Length: 312
Image (cartoon, rainbow, N blue to C red):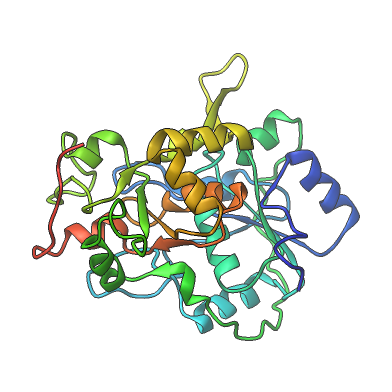
């Protein structure tokens, strides 16, 4: 299997198009996902329009059950392997993932593949909208069943997934005073972080984990408008701007500690989806010790015994 260093995290539409024309070893997955209060249905949209040859990855289905009923939790090794086999993905396949926002849920899917050791994986920067803007074709014919493959059961790198217990224990440590404390960055909006805006999930308190930092996921993204339409999509910022966004959120000193490997960092969000955007941005910046809190805020705030901060 290719190493992480040889397979880019991001590829452009032209790069994907070239790969599809020249190689049969590319597997394209649509990992679109929408918030619970959205009327959009990703599977239906996929059936109507997709990149030719793409298959639909339902992140709520390729997942593990959770005691609180949380969705899209990291799957077991066997569930992940079975999903890859169903898609016809082999250990050496180059998996390219996209979504219909541009950048939204595809980084979470990439995190899943990388966590299971499938380092030959990338996301399409700008997703389906940028693919179309580039003049590349889409298809709407019924998806063709792929020949199933054999995918050896992988081993999940548990060092990159943070559990509830680990996050609670870490929340008792102040990173300003304790060098062993992991920094936690929260991808939700600033209003939800400080408790002035409601959560999209009814009955769930807003606020944040003690000692965590606010870093809304869109701080890592650039928004584009398709000419002569109201349609917008997102791409990742250039590296220099990603770094500045991180500095603005946590300060230069903490950035230097993280990028030099002297401090670990965990990403969180509402339910573990957009935390993937922060995870990917940090990896692109060169941070090595980056993990993702799988349950994120929904899991933390659903437990009444937990301390919730509501100030800046």
